[in-house]
Every structure is written in C-alpha cells, then in structure tokens.
Length: 187
Image (cartoon, rainbow, N blue to C red; front, side, top):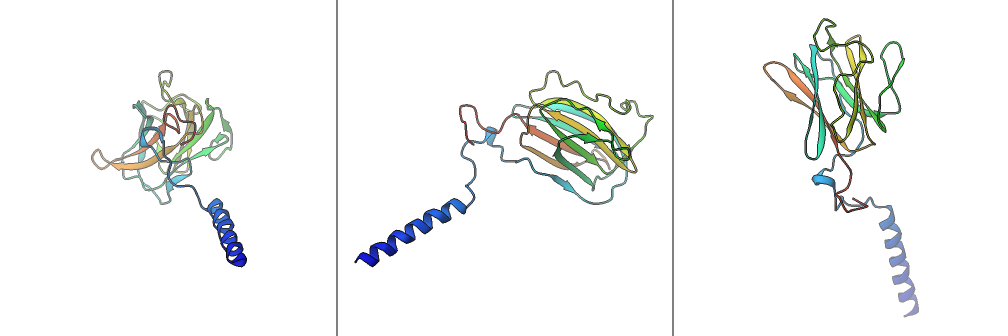
C-alpha cells in the first residue's frame, strides 16, 4: 500500500513538472481577437518592379502601412530591430517610437517619383495614429528598399502581400494597438 501511494505521488510530481515544460495554450484575452505575435515575417525570393507609393491607414484594432509595387512582390521582410540602418552605408536612420520595425521590400525606386522625399524623410504624418509614431525613408540600394516604421511599443504585427491593382501588388503591415483586451493584465 505504501509503495503504491509513493508511486502515485511520484507520478503526480512528474506530471506537474511536465506541465511546466509545456507551452501555454492560446491566449484567453487577446485584443480584438488578434493572435499575430512579434516575430520576423517575410518571403525570400527575387522581385522585379518598383516601389510606387507608401501610405498608411487607421483601423479600430490596428494601424496599417502599405507599400505599393508595380509588379508582383515576392521578396520582402518585416522585423523588429534595435536600429533601422541604410543598406550599403550602414548609417543609422533615426526613427521615433518605443520600438522599430524594419520593412524591407525587394524592389528599387525611381527617385523622380512624386512621393519620394530622400533619405531620412518622413513619408506619413502619424500624429493622429494610435500605434504608429514614425514612417521614415531609410533608402534603396541594389534593389532593396527599406522603410523604418516607429511604433509606440513592441506590439503584435502581421505582414502579407496582396495582389493588385492590375499587375502590381501591395505589402501590408498591420500593427495592433495592444496585446491584451482592455481590463486584462494577461492575454
């Protein structure tokens, strides 16, 4: 009897210990049902085409950045970085905000485009945005264009490419306003 109780106790201790090693289940209180996370997103491939516009929009649960390209975009990445740097030179580009996303599109630009304002220039007025703090031109070098996206904190984001309009495409970056639903400290 005593050995049976001892074995049962050891099994319970072992199961409790294994429970600590298992990752927690999906969040019970995500903000607006968002479960995006904050890790690198992207696709590694060669792209053709040119960046034609950079614009942003506000939504109830997130702020959105859109990069318009005049061809299908197959090479891109979005990730949190400590500093946004220019490709080629390595110079740090100042980007306001509590955290910075490096938005990389595998296409060049035409410096004669009307939206193009040169290195370090602000591309979007973010003064009325909930999450965005800065959208900064970081340069284009050898077919790679970098945009610095300053956000108020390291928040969940998603990034994806949409086809169109026409033969073009759009790189979309959505950054949530918060991690947890209001009134919840854990999500």
